[in-house]
Amino acid sequence: MNLSYFMRERTALIRLFYGKGRLPFEQMQREIEDEVPPWDPPPV
Image (cartoon, rainbow, N blue to C red):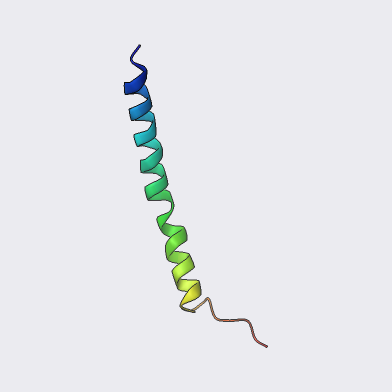
């Protein structure tokens, strides 16, 4: 069993999921910070 191969493949898979999974959250965060509708500030 080649442990280094397994670890490289596993970490590559984790990096792929992290890279693809974080994009919607980063976009949502940018929209909230830029106050793009429907992310208007709450009424005072």
